[in-house]
Length: 343
Image 1 (cartoon, one colour):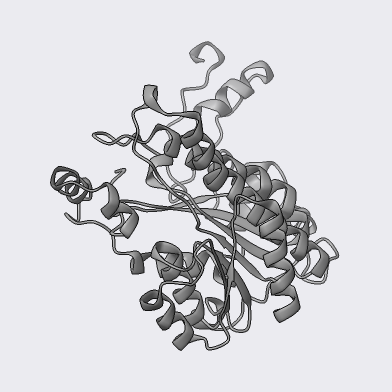
Image 2: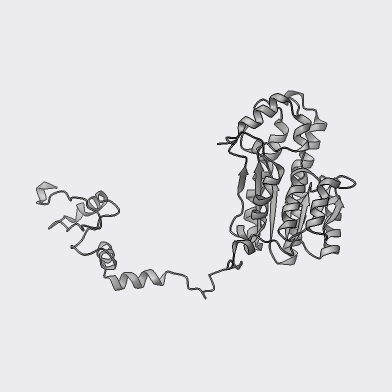
């Protein structure tokens, strides 16, 4: 650059604008401009602001501003869509008051706690579970929070059973606004020893059951034309291997439903329907007790930086958030609630 009589520029911030060298040959201007930082102003010495911005773009400030404003959407533009009223307090946004919430696996464990959380947020739970009757100790708090709660015996692995339960819900409440697919099971068997019967059972409940549940909910929500929220309970097992524990089929099923969530989010977004997954960590449930050993419990406690296992009630607030209007722009994602175990 010396041969053309111009010294290399000194890069400065906007506080000290940099004058343009006397002459920069045309074939070097692109190269010259690529050397300056994003914050440098190449042009006559001017104070920072609209005029400086205009000088940097080679136009006058009025023209620059006019062009910029012309590209913005106006509040009354037909292209500007506001499907959810986001005014008001966070308490109102997180409220599920009056919404009908189907919760599979809601008679016990994680499902029961999520149903309780939704009831406390004002929703009316419609609980699906394979048990003849819900576990009284876990169902009573839900019923206390929402006396309108109803229980429907359902086998989520059976499309006919799921469809019949949804038909009963529509008969009782006329609509479905929220659906939480929390039914699931785990069996501990070494990969090479897994029999076909066990493989079929876990996939039918953990994959087919989720598919049947959210598909029926989506059909109903589309027919209503009011949108809705779908939530699938995945697992930390869909993010990492379970060291010191057997569960190849379980991990496969949880990875599968997370994949389902991503695709369904794309397909249902046009109807105003959101779908997300929630991945708990090592939770103190009866399901965990069935496979627990002192060594496993010690390892589960140590997995979290907090030094303990997760309580089922610690999943209530995250689940309610994803189901409520507070998460109106959250879809196709997975929320890890694992106490930092995957950190």
